Image (cartoon, rainbow, N blue to C red; front, side, top):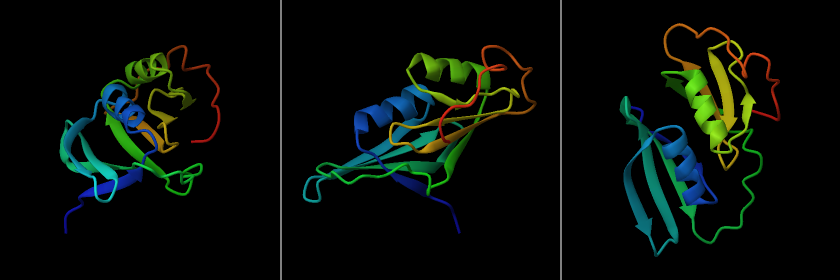
Length: 140
């Protein structure tokens, strides 16, 4: 058995690609537009693990409320520098819901409210501001 991908539905494909690709550094592996079904599938992967993908499904005409996405759980990524990626995401306007106060773990949410866990690769980093004193906000 081989794990292939996890799928999340997205309302705004451009905003989602900006978050996952520009923000988190994932790469688009392939895309499939299906005009007869009125949807687009975009498969993304982390540079270090291209075999495990996230499938973004954009239903072109859907007005469906995907809710708070708390029933999904979260996607987790190991990152080279948790402070740097949180700084980058925050500069993009992403709320850091659970800051990396411990230099090890943070949570953010995608434009479609999918909870994303960021974990520092290797040893945790020394606590640093602004993260060390920043409170958590919202749900993650």
